[in-house]
Length: 308
Image (cartoon, rainbow, N blue to C red; front, side, top):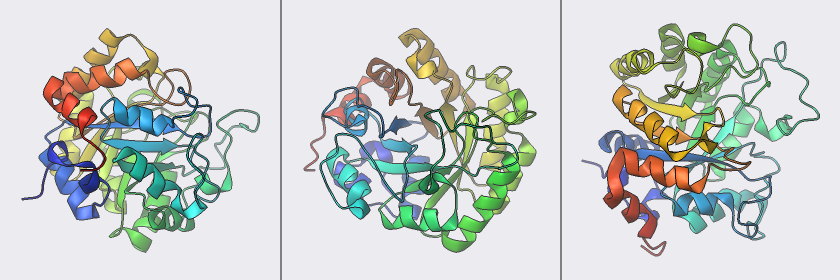
């Protein structure tokens, strides 16, 4: 039986095969914490990457949002060759690394040119970008959308299918949306349905991304519980996501969302990247971790030396 994430050392977390990754997550029984970070903004600690900061608060899996795989930028990262960016982050954090790629539906995208969410070539969900990410050492690709970028479920399916056919056995594939991403008609309960989950699963997703209960209007614990059960019936894992800036809410709110997500039966708990801008509030990361797995496992993840 494969080791669970909870029991893994940093050296083990940074050298997982796809099969080991999925088995380790499943074996942790809903106690895996994913923290999203943005590397292109000023880090909260100035000369320490946000990835290192979230790792210090208990993250098991770090998701890089707005990460351009063709021109990667992570503020405060030591100077390394472009192709070594992800491996250097792994070395510094001792954590699994995922990258968000966006299956933009150009017909639905808003003009985000003057906003932080504006797209760049290395952020699109293409086969070439997926291959580049995998070659850089990325463990999981998350096909999802940032605000206003026009990522539709149908676009996710088509790009997911192409990426899965090209390299599905080499990297974990996660698909879904944590908010509407600017697509009219895909808000609330229409962000994701059983029909969407079936389509994602058929297209090659290993993990289904769902909005966390209480983060999007109309998204209740009961509704997400039903979708999690359905995804599990198809042999897929799930990730419940806070992608609505509530990662910057008070600790009591975070604890409540964490427990509601736990009650859905989800496998991976995600907390977003805009407590301020770039990562969740550190106290909320720790509070989420403690809520889903207690002090012992939280301190264990925080305390382990990167030399192990």
